[in-house]
Each structure stands twice: as C-alpha cells, then as structure tokens.
Image 1: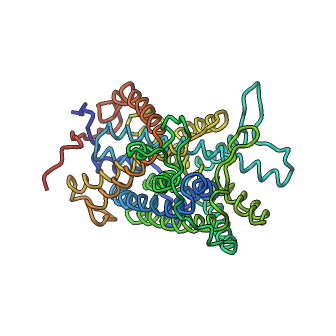
Image 2: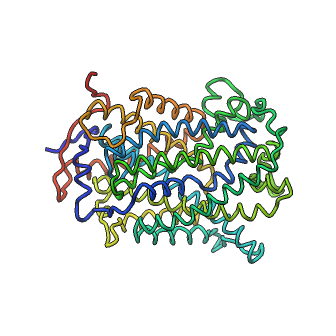
Image 3: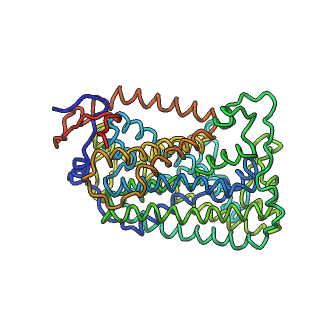
Length: 516
C-alpha cells in the first residue's frame, strides 16, 4: 500500500524502470562528447565577458582570478558527487531525482522547485542579456538606431529575447541530438573568441596593475542597512564586503554564477548511451575546460588595466554603467576587439539559454512523471522529447524575458544552485550507506570526507551572498512548500495517485541511516 509520509523515497530500480514507459520514453542519442559540449556551452556565457571585469572592479581587484579558483574548487567537489549519482541513477531530473532516492519526496520537491531558480530564472535573465548583445551587433551593421525592445501601450516588449526563446524551443522539440549539433558549432565559435581574447590581451599586460593583488577593504556607505553586504561579513562584524578578504570571498560567491550549468549534463543522463561512463566524463571534462579559460581571462583583464577602471559607475541618467572585457581593450586603444567580444558574447549566450531550457524541461519532465506536477507534461512526442513540458517552460521563460526587467538574478540563481549542490553531496554519503550494493560507473574518491568538504564549501559560498538574497530565497522556498501541500502531495504517484504502472514505495527519513 502506498505510503503517505513526507519522507517516502522512490527506489533506484523503479526510477530506472520508469525510463522504459512507452508514453514517457526519451530517445538515447547522446555520447560523452555531446555532454562535454553541452557543459561547455552552458557554462561559458556572458559571464566570461562581463562578470569578470565587474567583479574585479567592484569587489575583489586583481584577486578575481583567485575568486574563480575558489569557486572552481567548490564546483569540482560538487561535480564529483554529481558524477557518482548520475552514473548510479542515469535518469532525467538531476538533483531532483537523486534527492527522491535518498532524502524523500518532500525534499525532492523542494530541490525541484529550487532548480527553477537555476534553470528557468537563469534562462530568462540570460535571454535578456542576449537581447542586449544582439542590439550591439545589429548596431554595427545597421547603425545605432536599431533596438531590440519596443514600447506597446506603455509596456516594454523585448522582442530580441522573445525571438531567441522561440527559436531554441523549436530546436529542443526536434530533439537533443540536433540541439547538440547546433550547440557544437556555436560553442566552437565562442571558445575560439575566448582564446583570441586571452592571446591578444596578454600583449597588453602591465604587471604594476596586479599591485595590490588584494586591495585594502573599503568602508561601506554611511547609512547602509547591511542587506547589500555578504551575510558572513555581517556576522563577522565587518562594515562591508568590498575588497579585502571579505571582498575576495564575496567575489568567489558571485563568480560562482559563471560556473553554473555543468550540472545540467546530469539532467540528460536518460538520453545518453552508456550513461554510467559518458555522464561523469561530460561533467568533469566540461568543468576542467571552463576553469582554465576563466582563470586565464581573469588574469589577463586585470593585468590590462587598473582594477579601479573596471568599477561600476553611474551614467548622467542615473543608470549603472557596468564594465566588460571590452572596457579593458578600449582603454588600451584596441576598440576593434570590442566588436569581436560582442559577437562572442552573443554566441555564448545563445547556447547558455538553450541548455538551461533543456535542463529545466528535463526536471519538469521528471517531476511530472512522478505526479508532483500534471502527468500529461511527461508525455513524449514523435521526436522522443517531452513536447508539452518544452512548450510550457518556453512560454514561461519567454514571458518573463519579454516583459519583465530582471535585476539582481545572478545571486538568486547562485543560492538556489548551491543549495542543490549541498543536497546532492549529502545524498552520496547516504546512498553509499543505504545501498552499497548498487553498481556505480563512477565512484567518488574520499567518501565521506570529500562530500563533506563539498557541503562546507557550498555553505561557505552561500554565507558570502548578500542578506537580501537570503531573504528572497526563503520567500521563494515558502511559495514552493505551499504548492507542494496544495497539489503535489495529493497527486504524487508514490502517495497513491492512479497511474498505469504500480510503483513500489519505501518509507525513510533523512536521519534514518544504518550504523557503520
């Protein structure tokens, strides 16, 4: 008889068996190379072109390259956990599916809702950035009169963002293999441009710009409320988190946004041939590539100009003037490089939005198959993709990106992703104890020490996000809990909702672990 507790777990065997249901079966078309391309495609986006310069100017100074290293270490530890889980449970849904097998249904829902912050909200925010770069590129061709937004009845409509989401939605409906091929072409272009930036910028490095490597801390503005500084600096009694050690740590928490996306590879496990080996290679391979590129770009840009020239300023109209890589080249008289950087950013953002949309669709697909969302969304079409889920996600992302001004989303996306990383890292320890018999295509070394370090690293980065971000995150999660009790708990397949296939249920609380 199905269980009714919040902590009912879905067995690994049933999760894998569900992948063969005729109505919800995904087509297995991907290999390790496709997954590596997806990983690099989603991680290398506008962050490498804009976030690097802005973080150096506003928070860290030249030590931004060290901030990238700290963020990469946290990501690497979490990536090892994702690799083991994905090789053990090669099912769509990523952290949601992993949590369902270890922590139970309630926390699985929480993490699924949390992933919306990473995938859907992130895709909408990046689509807005894509539209800005599209306007820049079109300006090179047709003049500055071209804009990608227009006023309709007092409402600002961003047609550039809308166009991007619609085109990518069609690609995702037609199949992940086609999406992977398109991603490969675009990713090759943007990696080539990143390498060009590194090589050209290296000729303009002035080593005096690296001193001081960690600038002395700056005092916060008088009368500040404290919600804009990092939570850790507030707890430690510091007046702010700009420059100094607290700035370096806050910078690591911010540039973490630039690494977000490698975990999307885990959401495609169900569509991968030989996922036990291909998924870990895709996750770890893509993370290694982007880490080298990020640190190199950060080192070059802070060597080209003094970090103070990269600080965000205010335009005469009062709008923030955020600096980019193009700023560093323009200050060195290499204005033509800004055109190439804009094209690279446009290409970079295209694949970021596509893969984030793919990840959100696969999480929604997995939650729908389990009944926590309408099961009709899990049905696949003739191309072996969940068409209804893709359309729904695309409409929501398109609406948000087209009609809303999306600000301060980077940190919101960060806190949601770090929370997911913590649960996945803890899940590795739990599954090693509760199911030592499972075949693992990849075994994370140093369990439980390395997963615990991954949890601590992610918690550390979360503490260095702003107080305001934490308040928004708590509000978002409360909304998710209300939706679960209003709909998901009553419609859950494990809770007894009717389905064509009976599902076995086990009852377990996260704390119910066997002795060593």
